[in-house]
Length: 60
Image 1 (cartoon, one colour):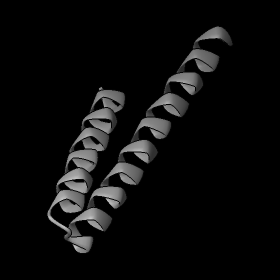
Image 2 (cartoon, one colour):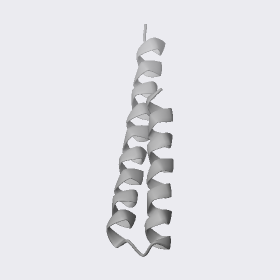
Image 3 (spheres, one colour):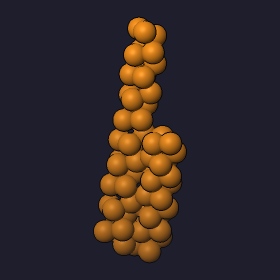
């Protein structure tokens, strides 16, 4: 679930970045890039949590 939210946030950010680029709106571009980074962080956190669950389950 967290991984999907991260991907969605990345897509939303990419869209903002592209719109900002087309509209020559540097602020919107930067906000889009920041959203993409936040989405990647959420995705990485979800991956790490899944790996930890897998390790935990394997050690039972």
